[in-house]
Length: 300
Image (cartoon, rainbow, N blue to C red; front, side):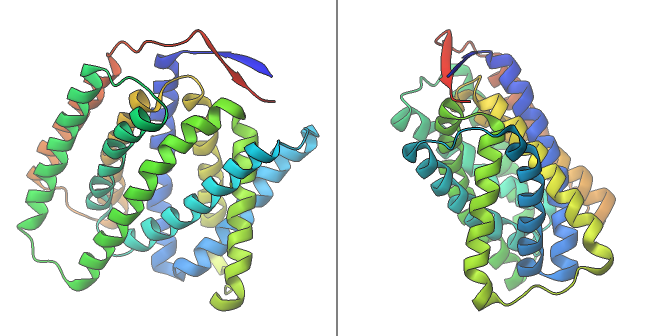
């Protein structure tokens, strides 16, 4: 066991970096979903992710994790498979910035789950920051309500909301997982589980078609997914979930930028007003004083 000193600010910065990387990856995935379909991109990305994580983890010849730790890895891997499928299916039908705004209900649920299951104290500034950020989401959704949307957008929004609920559980599991395993182990067993799930589904879903010229974007998405997972694992080992969950709101800024640059999705005045509240909430939460134990155990 290695002793990992708690550094909430460093963990916060790592989580912000993870959100940035994964938000840009979302734009890549939206392109792939539109180009080759959700089943094909999910299977091919799982294959590439497995190859990348195995190349990083296996040469270290580490001991196999305990049965209890392996159970957590598998359960979270299954959860990640479900939430990713729902989210990526949704962003193929919903503007990227709106999709990210819908996911913000997840970290708010995670704050409560972290208090109940991890016995973490929720600081007043974390609460105030989350309220401010959620107010920003309401402003954005009010703006979206003024526009006429079809059934595809409504179905996509429903899928993203379901994904957000799964992600709330994922945030809490990630914090517990980071206490008993390091980021490389977490990434490897997540990739292995996701690949196993898709191998199980493949007889029903069918073999994915050849990627053609889109293969490079699948590799890019997989590399960014791996980088984001490692950053998350490193950050959540050094700060509580109730403190780091608010970093998710910064993803809206990246989604707005990518949606505008890549998909020509217009950012409305409601979106801009909501973004100000979201950023303000993140900054407020980042300044909160989080009581920490000096160290936690992390298996290697």
